[in-house]
Every structure is written in structure tokens, then in C-alpha cells.
Length: 628
Figure (cartoon, rainbow, N blue to C red):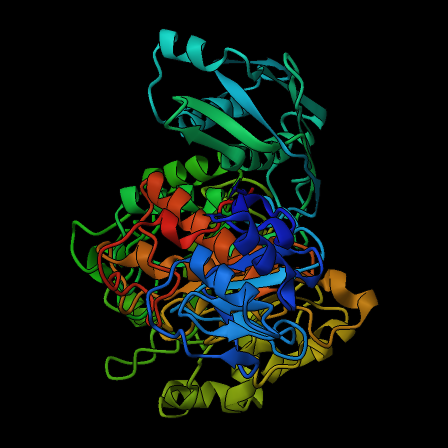
């Protein structure tokens, strides 16, 4: 008698035996006192996971048994309801009183009463979805109809057509693959409100995606704006797999019905081009990678103490004398090209001009705005020359009006962090000015920040500042100011939002991507709205990861960003209750494979130190659970 089953499809455990034996022996096996086989069940798999303190036995530990053998051993061991691939058998407490947690050295198999839910192989997790059990074939001659004529949508479809179909398939192979299969050959795009919507904070990125399971059916992608269409295209592209055996593109678990929208409107990656110059090509790679994770904002930390790489049209001397070299600068045309490249992909670009601290590089080109040759920063608040230069520079960046300039983004980051005002007190001219105005050093700090805020507001911008401005000035700040909270040990988010101020969540070190010993699980566990009253949660605009550049240059910036930024991206996009790292791990492993296939250097998710090399030879796809 031969009894064969497909373990991958979760058939009842009583049938989960694959062997050839005499009828009597088989009867003895099935009638034996097997705790796990006493009731029908389903095997759930948890890649890179384990549950401790609920072991039945470790007598098979490190014996090299495969999954099928371990299932058989579990079936003949009293009290066994699971095992890890190191050979340790588990009790029914696994996943109940014993927590399932990430563990890089093994996978976990646990017996359950119901089939394991199908998670979409999509990152970040959609807000709402349903799926089926059919596999459909996508025609390699997929056509696009409906609202596809605008430049933004047409360009997006062209990009995603290439991303979805990276492998060439001949006409004869395609025809053979489509025989006796459900074939989908058309995508209908519907923009419900505005196909030329402006890209600003609160832009509508919601979408609905329907993938049918009927032959000749049409994929339907609808959204209020072109930005939602782009997010939906990314989701569709992640559902498409290439079947090498069939030489065809397929979508498993169809039909799919996905309704999705981001939780937060501002989901940023900060890049730092002042500590190390990042070439334009690298910045474009960073932007492309962000779109794959539905990150919608680049926060460009443009200048700092170390260098001033922006060629300001009004003050070219700043970059001429403040850049690392004459070759490591950005012209205004360079900046415009990056901003437009990002916009066409649904990514906003928010510039940061960090002052009065972090501004030593300004002094070589404009010594008149610095306290002295021996005390360069913070910038001099006692002279109008400082604010005249600021007004000129801001005009270079903003065009002097809302939604214009090199950075049409209405949010502008003015820094304001880590200001050591002792330099002002040590400079006689500045001390005399403070005395004349009855200012303390803190008063001068507030005066400076209010002056540059007024300049930015007059040029149509809403100001973002690091959380020191809140700690020092609180409600003395303009009420439109947005507080970027990075010192979460010092700043109470509830205090900021309860006073009606908006905030961004950017915690050090949890979301500082240069904190190389912070795991993706730790980043994933952060909650931006912790402690914030429900009625104030709308004031938490989002936040993001900070790629400070002291130890990242073009050689390593991308694998420093990923996978940490992926964990942050899902936290900012997906519903608040999507928090299970065990469930997330195989999807993230799959997302890593996708990113690598698209040419994005993405460090292994099991690394204890970010951006370190893989531990040895192996397959990317071996790290992920296939979602069947």
C-alpha cells in the first residue's frame, strides 16, 4: 500500500505520511497512540523562528533529519505538536504559553486545527485583502487600457512592465504556457478623481487592485490619483512570479482583491550628502528603491559642518569654498533633475538646511555670518547679514513662493538641533548684542529660529525642526511648526500633540539606519503614536529612517539602508495592528529577494550587524516561505 500526500498544501495530519509499507504495519502506525494524529490538523511553517521552553524531547537534535522525517517522528512521539528543523520536538504549548520568536538558526513547524492563513507576498502589508486558491497566467503581451494617457501614468506603466517581466519569453513558449490555463491579458486602469494631482503632504495614495481567476478576465486597478495607481502597480508587480518550469508569468492565490491606503501621509528616508558626497546616480538608485517599499519622501539633508555641496545661484562662494572638492557639488539643475525624477515616481523631496548649528562649512565662503575664525558655529544671530544670506539661499530653493522653486515641496526642514550657544557668549560683539536686547543665549537661539522661520513662511513653506526646538521653546514656536522627534527619551510625543502641534517620528537609534547593531525586528517594533490620544493621532504625520552619512558613502549606503528601512516602511504604511515579526519575516525575506532581483543591494535580514556580508553560500529564496 502506498500513501502519498502533499505536505505543502496543509492536508489533514492523519494523512500526512509519505511511505510504502505492508497494510498491517500501516494500520499499527495509524492506530498507535499518537497525540498529534488523534485529530486532523494542518502544519503551519514559521521560517527563521522557534519557541523555547516547551520542548518534548531533544533526542533528535542536530541529527540532520529532513522535515518529512521530523513529521514522522513527531507523529510517533506522545505529546508532540511540532518541531524545529534542528530536530527538537515541541509540545502543544508552542505558540500558546511559549512565544514564537525569530531565530536565525532554524525553522519552526507547528500543528494547528485550521489551515495557515495566506499572507500576500507583498511588502508593506496591504490594509485589506482577500485571496483564492487559483493560479492565473499573465500574458506577456499584457495590454493596458482606461486612464493610461497622462505622462505620469504612462511612464509608470512602462517602468513596471519592465519590472514585472524581466525574463524574455518567446512567442511559441508563451503560446504553449497559455494552453489549458487561466490567462489574463489586460489591465484596466481607472483614475477616479485627478490624473494630474499635485504631489504634496496628504496626497491620496489609496488604490484598489482586483486580479481575477477567470479566463479572459481583466485586472482592475483603480485609484483617486495617479499616485495611488503607482502604489497599486508596485503591489501588482510583487504578486507576479516567473515560473521557470512553465516558462510563464503567474499570479498565485487568485482571485486577489486588495484595498489599500497608507496609515501615515509622510513616510521618509533621510539621506545625508554633507558627510559623504552621494553622486546623482546613487541618489536615483535610492529613490527607486524607496518606491518599491512605498516610501513617499526623501528628506535631503543637504549641508552640514563637513561640507556645503549645493551650488547656490545667489551665493556660489558657499560651495566653491565649502564643498569637499570642486567635483563634489550639486548644481541647481542637478537638484531640479533629482526632484523631478522623484516626483515622477510619487516621491516628495523635502530639503533640510540645518542651522544655526551644524553650519561650519558656510564660514569659508561667508565668514561675515560666523561668530569668529576660531568659533564658526552656531551662525551669528547678531547681524542682518546672516538673515539676508538665508533669505537669498531659501529663495534659490523655494522660488520665493509656495509650490515653486527647486523644491516645490511645501515642507522645509530648518534643523535647529544640537546648538551649543556658548560660542555666542564668548564672542564680544554677540554678547554685547544680547545685552542690548536683554537676551540670554537661549533667547538668542529662539530669536534666530523665529527669524529663519519667518523667512521660510514668507516664501510659502511650512517649517520642520528637530525636537530641540520644542524642548527649548515649546508653544513659543509658530503653531504651524512640525516637530521631528529624534530624542524620544527626552521629548514626550503626547506633550507635542496635545498642544496641537504636528510631529514626525524619527527615533535614535531605533530608526537611525547607521545604528548598525539595531535589528530589523527592533525597528519594526517601534510605534509612532505611542501614548498619543486617539483624537490627536492625526497630528502624527509619520516619520522615517535617518541615513546619517558619517559611515556611509556610495560603496555601502544602500545595504546600510536596507533591510532596516523596509521594517520602518511597513510600520508607516500598514495598519497599526500589523506587528508580528514572525509573520513578517518570510515576507521580508521575499522582499529582499525581489529587491536584489531589481538590482538593489539589500543586506541579509538575519544579520546581527547591518550591511555585513552573508554568512556563507546559499540561496536568497531559501530564506522565504512560498505563499501557497
